[in-house]
Length: 294
Image 1 (cartoon, helix red, strand yellow):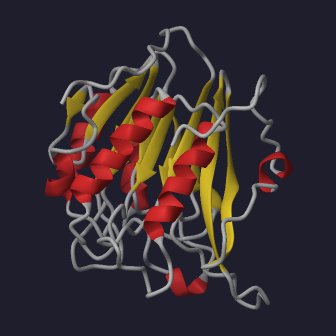
Image 2: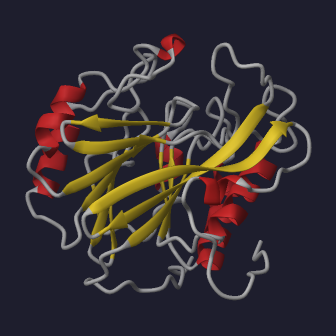
């Protein structure tokens, strides 16, 4: 397959928009997740929603598949189509439900470098560097970064990128605010904190928790994106319906901000509109309305 014709970003570009999708939990068609959630339809809707923000890249932070389902050929075709329509790369990394070796040959064809495992990759958007890490520790609830991965990351970060670096991994290096998820983030986050201290890392993108959350690892912002597939209501909430979300991340010359954007609410009913974008301070796309490219 030929390399997609993505738009080239100038090295001097200082502001970037990233759209994060996470935890799509795709099942073999026509299976529904939990017998009721059409995750392919939700993923397509999430990619359509991403188009409104004209991202410089889409980052999929793990659990593309559900329970190691063999959906990767179909998912690769969908994401390649999305990348062509969006005019930007779609960067993926595995979660605890994925098979990294299956992903390695199908995704991230625009990567600039590989790490010690098939999911450690380096990408450049002009002067912005995005590094992905495989944080899964098979058979265990918490994630893990090995000494080999951390050494590789330390070596990569030794040379700063012109506009800094964003890390992406599945397991958050901060504890969930939900007690039921205690101990399911990244084990030994202090090891990662020591590697990135004093480097050009501007932010860390994660998934896994199926709820939005922000935090800090040392002085570096951490954003945990809510899931495309489903997000249980918080304890005590009267809302029993699942919801589907993406995240929009803005990087300015000296700033990092992230916001959840609603894709669908009250599943498995019809798709909702998107009243949440402006509520979270995200401006609409300027100019003429854009017809859906999907």
